[in-house]
Image 1 (cartoon, helix red, strand yellow):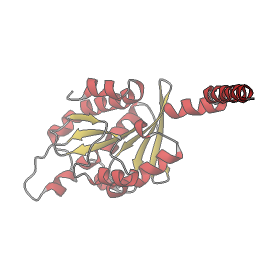
Image 2 (cartoon, rainbow, N blue to C red):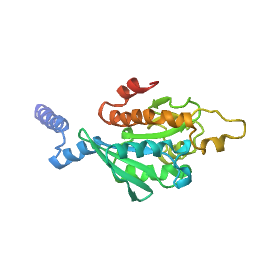
Image 3 (tube, rainbow, N blue to C red):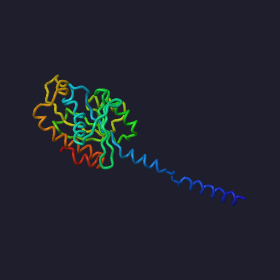
Image 4 (cartoon, one colour):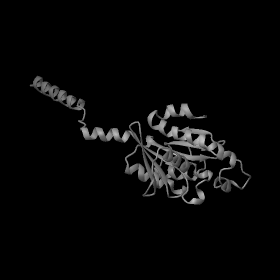
Length: 225
């Protein structure tokens, strides 16, 4: 009797182990969905809406996306919480987003489109200006604090994390005490304007590299360039 019970228990245990080792079936439409998600990227350029802000230092995020859109003959469409253009490159889909929420509420647009398009956090790239870097300096990081930037501060708050990739574009800090706001919201000077096209060209390559070569390779290739 004891042997029979032992044999029964052993047989049952084997069946359970067998079931545990069976991998869940993934249907074809699920595979396609997983693949499409991993190949979709949300590229967010930070800035303020309105003609008065178009050529200001604080709007470098918008300027980078506008440059790429013009280069690739893309059109922005007014959508919920921003303007959006779709760019397809090497099997990847890049959603170029310019939030219309003003800088201080950028996180609302990022979260909405991230959820709507089912884009994972690691596939998000935020482009922003940085006072702590000399003009045109490139700094790509996988995470970090807001550094006093109101756009990043709101994104951190809404997403409840700092672990998303940001591309910081240096605008330098050549302003007198008490003139930071005027400087950031001021337009590029003649020298900066002459150098911007080359910096924007590199910025467009950074976006493409982020989606095709990956973050680590992009950082190695472009940081400090």
